[in-house]
Picture 1 (spheres, rainbow, N blue to C red):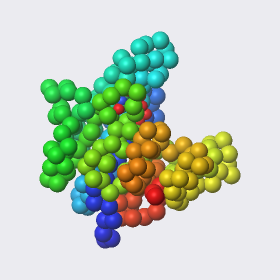
Picture 2: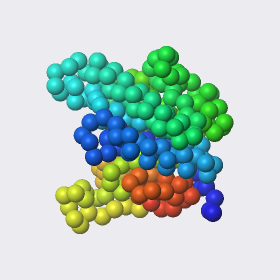
Picture 3: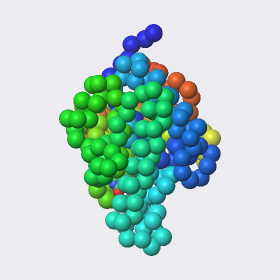
Length: 238
Ligand code: UDP
């Protein structure tokens, strides 16, 4: 069995990744499958922290477009990420792993507060940390939360799981000739105006020289293969 190339990683899952074939909410089979993947990688020796979005329930921008106050909408979006994090904690523990939800907004009756040193301790003890509520601030996304936490806890790599198997030079759904990149530099992403993650999150990665891999979690075992250094999806680094 090949060794892990990455020891400590943050894996960002979108809220939509939990929906399966539904168009809202959480599909138990899907979250179970994702949990199994994460456990497999953790048992191979990786320290894994998860950041899960909330787009399967609420997004602040969408609520604001429908007439709601933006900050209230973002608070609802952050609470949606806590719901997803609790569901993932349950799915992980049902399968024998130990997990801790840590929230950026105080909601101590249902989970821990995010405290950096405690988060690192959880990882060192073999627990899967789930960072909920993004950055804790409105007008940000969970991509920014994932980049921020990855930098704070000294992660070797930020993984962004998407439905597309990497970064393309144009939309592969619209353009059958679209070309996928194996690797890119931060500057290439900016000069080619490629859509990797939101600008604030990307700036955090670039400024802290945090490598980022965009890949598709659809295939069983893919997370472990990525941690063993296989070039799956697109790697973005300096
Ligand atoms: N959110 C926020 N601040 C953060 C992270 C998230 O206000 O630091 C809110 C925002 O409304 C966002 C929602 O939570 O739309 C859900 O997060 P996101 O859109 O990143 O979820 P994803 O698209 O990854 O499912």
